[in-house]
Structure formats: C-alpha cells, structure tokens
Image 1 (cartoon, rainbow, N blue to C red):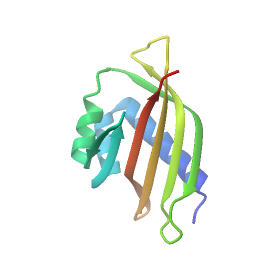
Image 2: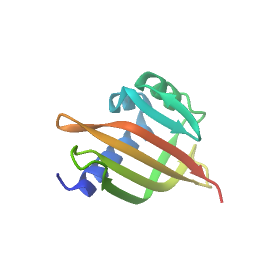
Image 3: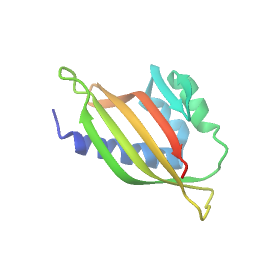
Image 4: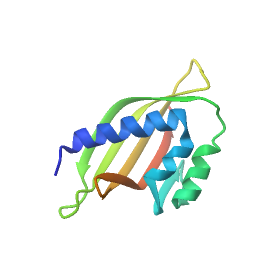
Amino acid sequence: MADINAIAKQFTDFYYATFDSDRSVLNSLYRPESMLSWEGTPILGNTSITEKLTTLPFAKVQHKVTTLDAQPSSPTVASLLVSVTGLLVVDDSPNPLQFSQVFHLIPDGASYYVYNDIFRLNYA
C-alpha cells in the first residue's frame, strides 16, 4: 500500500480546499452508497450529501486542519480511515468553531471515494 499518511494529506487538502471554494464539486467524491453523518443526522447517497453540503447556512467557510491521522481499514483492500480535527472560520467570524471529521476512503481506480463521512462540531 502507498504511504497512507501522504494519501490522507492529499485527500484532505483537496477536500477542504474544494469545500471552501465550491461545495458542489464534492459530489464526485461520493457514491450512491456513501453515507454522511452530519451532527448525528444520517444522509445516504452522493446526491443527498451534496444537497446537504451546498445548502449549509453560510456563504464563506475556511477549514484549518490541526490534526490528521490515518490507518488502513482492511487487510485485503487498500482502504483507509482518516481522522481530522481543526477549526472552521465561518463568514469571517472572529470566533472559529472546532470540528472533527472521519472519512472512510475506498479505492476507485487510481483515486479514492468517500464511503463514510462523520462530521461533528466540538463544543467546549
């Protein structure tokens, strides 16, 4: 298996840069069987996931990743789990929000797609 930390970094750099600039493009990272848990609410399928992400109630967002951990998730498939924590700056607010997100990435040709995605804001 390739260096999973490098894959995780490349994926998250792309994911968050895309999320922050044009969330509708994220549709290509999900499949009809993909699932997102957004603040405890399950959402199934790339169309529903994209609809959720593109209708979030803010105009501008910036993700600042503070930790990134990755592990292989199968002994037979080059899939991986990626755990991220960081800060969200929403609509230029001076008070960033803390978040955590876990991705389960499945190989798809030369790239990966998101099979599972769990997102939570972390309130202190």
